[in-house]
Image (tube, rainbow over all chains, first blue to last red; front, side):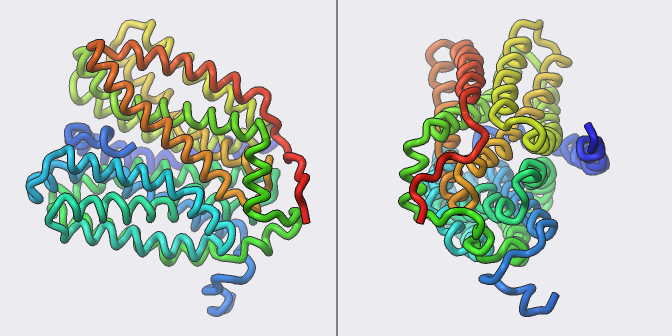
Length: 41
Length: 408
């Protein structure tokens, strides 16, 4: 693939992913318990 | 750029980079805030003295309105430009959120969370902004551009939900709603970036009235097959999103496993949205979609055949997350490839309605058969069957312009 950087670009989002996982680690169980999924999709 | 040009709502569209950035940011905010609504259920139910059924009905109204008005809002976007539509939608969205902070009855909730936000969502999410992006990006780069915008929506779902949960815990639901309204209000500024005259951007395409575009799409088999495929997408996502945590709990896995699974769906969705969009620039979109739906079927089948463990549940969540919204850039891109950019938002809006109908059945029918049978066997089996069906129906779709017989 000539433009390999296009495929690797999402790697730049790993810091954001880490932030998100940290937020979810703190809040995920209450989110689930409030029925988040059932109500929103 | 002069101030006059920067705030020009009717003239030519902005540079592609600006349009893509603003479009991605708009859906990040609009989709992210939307996903947080369920968090408000316990506090608002108690405060307003209404049952969870009433709250659920308000959200259901919102989803229904979102789907039903989407083709019409899309047509407005095609005619007047995404900027004006996003601006109007932002006003309704903010009014819905702020109004929900003040109402004191279920009827108020239906009006704010249900109607106002339903219309606001239709005017500020994928269907509208992808139309704007499609008009400024060359066809060979549309997959990449649509993938970036879709990944923005996925990022919003991933980040705004836990942030809103923190706000809710610290400040209570009224203040949290106002803060979210403030976030959504930023879309009014970002709307400038997606503003511009659609007709000017589609000058290289044959002139075609809305009625002609509808008639052409209705007579084109590929369009119907695309609708069928997106119905399956809605079914899968709603079934898994609504029932998967309960399934894990039924099977004896702890709360923290289900919660982590949710986070992994959100995280891998960001990467999948981008990469599948990008794939559409290198391979035929209908084949990529076919492969995506087949992969969903394989992932579900392998998950069910393997012994259920913490690892298998998390791997399944990550894999399904990766396959979650990759359908959006590919499906919208196919609509654009078939019929051009002039009526993209309206025609994609109809396909999106099909997705919402699939969502309805995925959420409701799985629950119905669970109550009847005491397990999710029916829903899992139908999900695999629909995966096969969707993989097959995309194969004959042509990733090329439909013959525009009715041109002026």
